[in-house]
Structures are given as C-alpha cells and as structure tokens.
Length: 520
Image 1 (cartoon, helix red, strand yellow):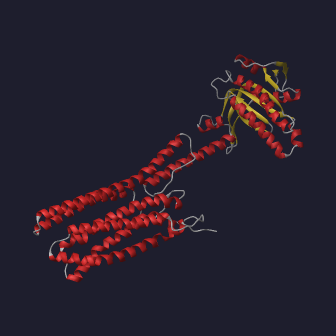
Image 2 (cartoon, helix red, strand yellow):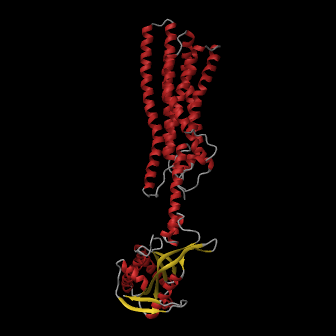
Image 3 (tube, one colour):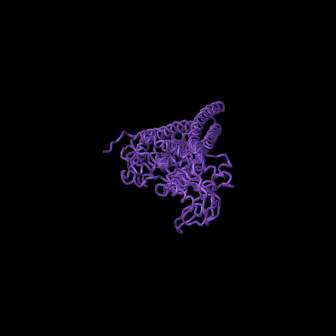
C-alpha cells in the first residue's frame, strides 16, 4: 500500500525561489522607477496613478501565475511524494526537464504583460501616452523581470537537478527525452551573461538618461547628481550580490557533475567499476555523464564476459584469443602434457549422492587448477574426473622450462590432494587417490571444432602417449608415471624426484616402446 509524504521539499524551495526572485525584482523595479520616471506634470500624474494600480496588479498576477505554476508542477508533486515504485511516463519526464524554464517563463510573463497593462491604463485614464513614460512603464519592468526570470530559472534548475531528476531519472538519459525546451549550456551561459553583465549596464544607462532629462527640465544639478550617486551605489551593490550568487549557482551546476565525472574516470582507471555518475540534466553535461555511465557499463559487461569466458576457457588462452595471437588453423609446438585422473571414481559415483559427487569434483578440480596455474600451466579441459594440463605451450622455447614445471606440478598435486583428503577425513569421507602422467613432445595446437563452435586445444602423439601413461599408471597402482625424456629435461632445470621404477613399455597404437619412470 502506497503512502504519501507531505508536500516535497523541492516544491517549497522552488516556489520560494520564484516568489523571492520576483519580489526582489519588484522592489528593484519600484526603486529604479522612482529614480527614472519623468518629471513633467503628466509623468508625475501617471506615476501617481500607477502607484494606485500596482498593488492590485501584483496581487492578481502573482495569484494567477502561482496557480499556473502549481498546476504545471502538480503531476510532478504527485509522483515524487508517492512512495510506490512506479515508472514515470514520458510526459512526466518532459515536464520535469522543462519545469525550470516553464517556471521562469510564467513568472516573466507577468512582467512582460506589465507594459501593455499600464500603457493601456494610461491611455484610458489620460487619453494619450508619451515616450517619457518608457523608462517607468517599459524599460524598468522588462529589465527587472528578466533578472527575476534568470534567478528563478538558474536556481530552479539547480533545485530540480539535485532533488527531482534523481527520483524521476534514476538511470539518467535525460537527453533522450524528446520534445523538451530546456536550454543547452551555451544558452544558459548567455542568459547568465546578460543577467550579470548587460542588465546592470542597461540599468545604469537608464539612470544616466533619467538624470539628463531631469537636468534638462530645470532640476538643480546638485540634487540630480546626489540622487544619481545614491542610485548608482545601490544598483552596484544589488547587482554585485546577485552576480556572485548566480555565478556560484551556475558554477555548481557545471563543476559538480564534471568533478564527479573526473572522479569516476579516476576510479575506472584504478579498476573500480562499481559506480557511475548521477545524470540530472538534458544538456551537454548530461550527455557527457550518460557517456561516462555507458563507458562504465561497457567495461562492466566486458569484465563479466571476460570472467565468464575465463571460466570456460583458461584465462591465458582467453587473453591470447582476444588479442588475436592464436592462429585460426593449427600449429606445431613443443609442450609438456600432464594427465591427472581420480582412481576409483566410478565406485564413488555409484555410492554417493549426485550432489556429493559434484561437490567432491568441484573441490578437487578447484585445488588442482589453482596449483596448475601457480606452476605456469593451464588446464586444457576437464574430461569426466580427469584433467588435461599443458605446460610450456606459449613459452619461446618450452623445452627450457615446460617439462620442469610439469614435473613440479605433478609432484605438488600429491601434496594438495593430501590436504584435501585431510578435510574429507574430518567430514567422514573416503580419501581420494590420483594417477598422474607427464610426457613431453610436439603437439598440434589450434582452434578445433565445428565452424560455429570450436575450442582451443592440443592433439597429437604426445597427448596420446600422456593419456596412455596415465591409464598404465592406474593399472600398475602407482601415482606418477613420467616419460624418461620429460624427466631428463626437468632434471636439467633442477627438478628431481625419487625414481621408484624404470621400464620400457609398449603403448597401444605405437610401434616403438617408451621409456617411463615411476616417481614418488
């Protein structure tokens, strides 16, 4: 069941901003009109007449425009204070993006209508209108209204970016919403420039022109200069304060998201892909933020693909495949091939539950694979309860170290298996026994399989001999059989072991015998 919160904070701040900006503009307009209005009897009579109408005009326009703004914002209010997790419609999203501009435009419309209203009222009351009324009825209201609209828009935009956009656009991508009228960065900077640079100049120009007119109409020069000096000081202080405030607002709406993007890119360079950036605008900054998020997501997908790929294909093979270093066909290489097979697995599989069998195999393969990688080899494939492991395949000269690494790995497998059996004994499970064989020679390595599905593997006589030795190892009840050629290569590189058996064996499919060693 959804619950409704009170009127949201962003709405209260937005209304207070709009009312405050227009009230400040009203005070400014009154002050400048008092300083700039004409001094002829007609102008003074009009000014007195305007003063009687102004409270009624402000009451009506403020009420109507505030009602219009609330009506426009009400769907957004209703959505943001609703705790239910619903997706906003495209229409609501457009309304959110356009809201700061609409609020400012609605507020400015009251100022824009002011010259029409007061000029018409003057004609109806006095029968004519004079150019000397332009400063008080046209120039001053429009400048003050533009300043109010600018403040309302920039501050409202800041409020919506911080408090509304994250709720309505949790995934960003504001720039993809069509039919919006939100200004881009260049337009916003132009509005800001006019407000903090040209508006004060126009106001000062109006004050100077008014002073000239008053001197021409015979007012004492000293009084006019004193009034102009006071008005200039007040105008300067007011616009300096407004300029600093708007500069901070505009800077924050630009520098904060850019700083967040820089921080995020720094994390990405460090390998942290956990967070993206918040997107709260539909302008160029928002597009750039969406691009950063797309980059982060792409890298996340790549990491996930690589991780998944690395679970299916050995990471070293995966990286070489992605780098294009492995040929499409096969190539002859020198490598050492190791087979590791569980003895008595068939009996275990018959008596144990399937889940226990899978758990046992996973624990065994995890321990063996970690050790294989530590020794510099890679698991070519899992074959039932056996591993086919290759060493030295990618070394410049695998005979230099591949055989030594393979023998060291084979000897270490017994130690890892002993540690695994200790844990199994504690759980009341039977110990595992392995038969391991190693042989070195030329292999055909390549991407083998169907046109639409293949794997990178090794085949050839060396692989067959290693497989036959592993089977012979099981038949003779030993734990490790190594071809004499492999052992001699390994011993030349400092890896030795206790030899318990020397024999020449005939292997199925081969006419020549193979010298093998039983190693403890």
